[in-house]
Length: 450
Image (tube, rainbow, N blue to C red; front, side, top):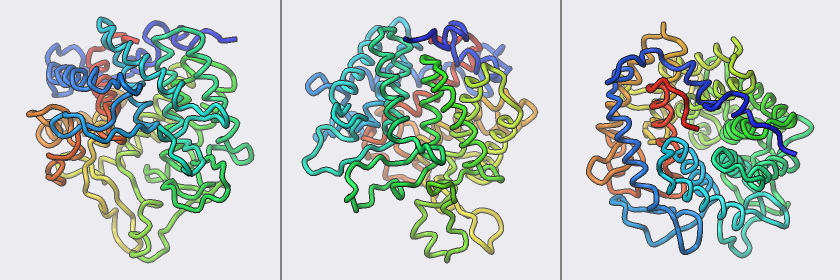
């Protein structure tokens, strides 16, 4: 039996209406927002819709096409990975709420929903498989991170389709994670659900019993979205658990995130190791600037839902610390792009940037987080300055004004991206689409369209 959703409890605007109440205050300017022309932001979102939908809809196999070349011609190889498919569904559903006069977006979301539930769900062991079609002799496991995105997308789709079957899929997905991925002994969620104990290969997500920042923040994101449409006590319990866990355990004192913990919450920390060992194992332990600033937004969003709109003081303090640390350590001078990663090596003063790559997703997440926090902390004069500088950077180094879309990374550090694919299994319209919609809603200062 399903209850009234938090969307109804919050009013027509739902969560984004709550967030807009906390958004930057200079919305009276009809032309610009925090120094950026509103028309430019709207134009970029319009271009995104035109580029991705219906281009990515696969009417042959179902779901969404994955790979497109630099000029938006469809690539020959078209794998279908759960994260890509889920993000395609989430983006279509969110855009459908932002553009209520475009029923094609509702159809695009319905198309993705069918593929997710009909092709990617394993009726035997449950959970969503990572790849379709499933390859013979493929390792038998479920990636919790990917299943979190499936839950996130299904919850978003439930906001535009109130049929009982949709909410049933939301609950089914949540309960599978609860039963198979949640650690009942120590709390949190395992990165991997492994059905074949003989799996020996490195699956790229740390040890099977580790708990990771990337998995945890997107579970937090998914459960936050789930609670808006399925406000059950069990969902709220997990929302509270993941909010407090990410905020109080993953976020370090300096405002950066610890990447991995063992199952009993011992940090995977290589600080005492040699420089070469650290660099050889940098995937397991570093400061990820993009995830840090994205998590500041996700924590604040989760707290808004958890508290019904009255974010507690500790969450405000922690999220501001995360923003400040990222601004002080992760940006190019003049806020001309956010670097990929860094490390605090023993014996060195401050942090060393160990990855200068400026990924498209990190720029998008940083940009819209700065918009939100510019309003939450109007006394922090650096936030709007960084927001405006980042828009200039993205216009000059990240957005392809000839073919459309965003490069994989900023041209200043990665000039070869100019001929790389505009879409692939780890790059859809999710990050920059969300960023543009968030900022426009803050700028418009009006009730959310979903």
